[in-house]
Length: 294
Ligand SMILES: [Fe+2]
Figure: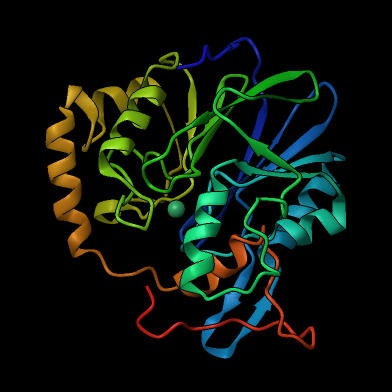
């Protein structure tokens, strides 16, 4: 495991944008000193039944970035999401910035390139993104040092990004009362997810953690921020030192009962292309539905 250079003295500003349609939380994170900003896990709106794509959620973020007078330098995906579409290209076109995702996106592209029977024009080398992160890779947001932690298990390309004293955990963990994300997608692995969660829980206890999803278990209000210390003590799936064997057994049984995410078919096709909608040979945006392919 590489050395992760945490610096708890740096406190980036964080603003969350909850998308009620998909229960996703997108973030604007910025360095107060330089006004450089990153967007983590943006959302593009889709009415799948109507085949209609719009950008209200991303527009709210753009308005806010402009109102705060920030410079968008990074547009990061914690992983290839299966439940919402990324708005990365829309944000990049409007505000600039570099897109980035975990380097194992190539495996995800290989897997789903087959599922969606993509032709050779679909590159499976991650080249749709400006930056591919490896475990321990460093980057910077203004004067704040940042680094990526590879956290496979939910998907192979999952990454947690640490920005000063804040970590954006993707679907590596949910809030303490939400537990953990499923590990049954192609390339997912419950044991790997457990190991990845342990990496995350080895960060300083006061580290702020920001979730990618929250479903308000038990009818409570939606929440997205906790700490490493709280997760360690209270997470219902891994807190209090639960064993790897118990976690794998529990996660596997639970996953077998979960329904397929409603937007998995459009989400994968778009997100494995860094948020670009695929096109037919005439250049028209189209989505496929592989029958009995998933
Ligand atoms: Fe996910």
